[in-house]
Image (cartoon, rainbow, N blue to C red; front, side, top):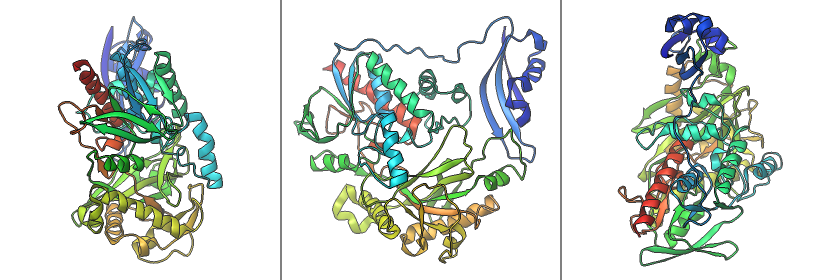
Length: 519
């Protein structure tokens, strides 16, 4: 027998199965000792009122063992002798495109400019501790893409794009914790993702796929509306019947390459701003109404306001996390955030960004589709020049920034390369500064105490998404002018985050398979 029931629990009751077993039995109408198993289906924290609740939906089993939490069936057949598809990039879009290609009977050949996940760790350590940036191996480039060492949040609103459950189940089968299948805001953690990504690599290789690391695409040949071949930095020529580019929003060289070879790209909306960091204890106090409870997770927030006709919003909020250096080229500063699985850092950070409008980069219109990208580059380069020291980042107390005054000192910050006291209100573009300042004031009316002297802003948070979109046919998935080119994920401008990028990668693999089967 199996019965689904909804439970409203205290944080302590929801913390362990022993805490809610009796309540689940009562809700299911069976004796506790008759329960053979309980499986959580959904779980979320409701902190809207002073009495914080945990909402759970569970399946209660009696006389049978709980069913497998995985509903889908994944068949990774041998593809050694199947037609090859080149996949450029091994972030979520590229990896999931490869897995889907294998299911559909094609052999993926993945080209990755960076290193395998575990080798990336060494370069990231050098970046954080010695300020030594490897331009092809960093927080953005390498196996697993930006998601591997950038938190691993799996929440997405892209439910119309594909099967979210399918993506979560694939991650679970490759080593993610079971809780990603039922948490309202699932999260893996940067400490666990490398092993999961390595497991996905093994699945691809075991099926006969090919992965070539430290292989950067530098050129391509296009004639009669098709890509004929790619060239790598070793001047190797790589040919296939179809190509999937899943290169991420930071692979600017690919945008410049496409533009130079007549492959249409276009500007798209994006946002820029700063990363703000508070003591996690303060965010807990605000969100949990002053309640201290060891059974509650590190509190998060999601803030959105309209200021002067622009969106100002939080992005990639990392409770119990740290700020990390995410530059991909020398002479630029870019920051992002991450959390490990336990989210037990004493800091909470989030990007707070302002919508960028065409009028903001009008002076660079001679660069056409690349104008917004140029604006992004200039801000990152300015942050580098003002910090004066390697990967140290400019920073300012939040209250000082809002009040247009320089900070006398800075609070302790999680950013490992270090911060440099900088009057960010003086040098950030006016459309960013003014709207951020008003946005922070509005946030404080919703979260009293958010505008705190103990909070610090660190700059710049400039890569919330790509400022470029690579147009594609919505019916067939391929580029509007290049029939055998399929672009996927954040770099294509059609996704944001791990899950939506993975879904987009799967979708493009299916479109690619349809194209090849029609030849």
